[in-house]
Image 1 (tube, rainbow, N blue to C red):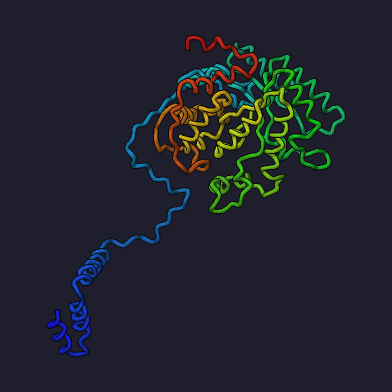
Image 2 (image 1 turned 180 degrees about the vertical axis):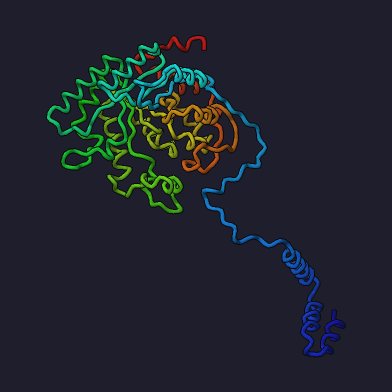
Length: 397
């Protein structure tokens, strides 16, 4: 190396390439070989096909199929006959109930609960169709009330009378929509709170009638959060901008949810079912605390299966601990979507998609719930709290 260095000094100063080579030659082998490797790699990379930097794929479009090769199971029906406690059939008075029952049978759905009974004359039309078709044991209707008329002098008397009438013609529960606490206002334009004291006799009446009250309070908390890159519901809010709410529009999420919890606690003789796992499916520890605190409260899993599917171990532990307090619900009635619920609840499959990407861009995993838990989720808990269900329909199945 010393001889090489002396030779370099003899070269003409203007020969830049020679000076560069001599400098390299003067380096110790410790530095020379790694540098040579780097330069060679860069040269090879430069010869490759350049990346098309003009290609643009947005978040909505980027959804590559998984390359995982793992066992898959696709149950098309539930492993036990089940009760769907959260379904909507708005025109059941005219609905082809024979077709509905055929679809239910294909899913192993023993009973469907139509939460959209509407009450009064509309409910009577639905019950007439059910009775005429002979499906009184398969189709249950909950009634609804008009809370927007709360300022009317006869509101309370008329509403209590309606509940008595609806019970007499076959209603088996009361459904309260999310409009209560969000969009329902009195004549002065004030938001009617869920725990408005004028409604207390109604919750008490439901308890007297043996009606469970299934209540949808608020919406996912992400709807109240800034619509930015930190919001998991960013895509949904982009595609459904009407779902976005300001921090206090019409009240904070915590306020609305807290009003519902208040009536649950104060009306201990009434059974309440919090729709959508009380909007705590992504915080099961908090939901467990709520169930511990309020013994007359149940929850159902409608429209939140994607939240459960991304936390299979935590969800499995939750269902094991609270197996007596959770009901099966779906919300929108679309037969082709039920198998996703069965797959999450019953299998140990890995990394599979939800059917609405704007609800859940992540992949899900099966909870692999044991039969003891599945039986309670699918029907045994419903038998405890929904009046008139025939337990004999499950004998031998």
